Amino acid sequence: MKALGIIPARYGSTRFPGKPLADILGKPMIWHVYTRARQALENVIIATDDERIFSKAQDLGLQAVMTGSHHRSGTERCKEALEIYEQETGQAFDLVVNIQGDEPLIDPAIISTLTEGFCADTQIATLIRQENDWENLFNPNVVKVIITQDNKAIYFSRTAIPFLRDIDKRHWTEYHTFFTHIGIYAYRSDILRKIVGLNPTPLEQAEKLEQLRWIENGYTIKTNIVDYIGIGVDTINDLDRVISILKSSGNGQFQ
Image (cartoon, rainbow, N blue to C red):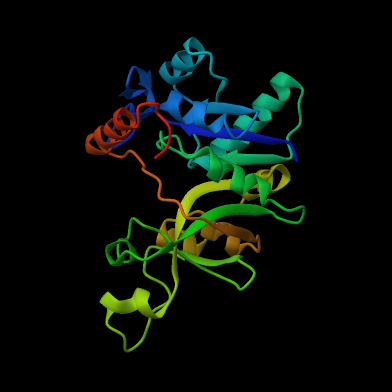
């Protein structure tokens, strides 16, 4: 299947304005994400509605497209970027990989895992990992997921699920295998075009998780279990941590 990696990049951020252009050892954050994604995918583009990000990408020789500013999510931006890029290049892509633009240390291997495990009958795929950290399990910013026996997602939640009755919460991970979500998706191109046209649903609005909209409308999300902990940059402290890791690694490779 021919895949296109898309990195949605917004300039505006409540906690960290201009994050995609944040300097990391002489290069903007978006450059680090892009170059790592290119180790896994032949075709990668940055999708942005900001001229500053677009211009910087062009200056650095990175493929980028300008999208509208009306999008409510990175998924919607990916759909428009796909259509623009297909029209510009005359190519057609079977698969779109939505790569978060704030993980400058993303391991190319997890992108490969996602795409290589994408079967002919898969509609949407994502990654999850086993969660053994008690604090993460009860952190609403860490999304939890429950899956079927054949690894299809049943539900995503900001609450620890399932609830273990009559067991002290501090010991839940000793009695059950919990999974947390890694926010990278792959979609069949035709499925991507369909899901962006769906209206918000009650579960999505309750949890503020758009993947619930897809499940509520009958789409299946295949999960792949990986042993991976990403480092998302949401604050200056996160950025300092990334820079420290890159400096200590010497060659900028994922540690």
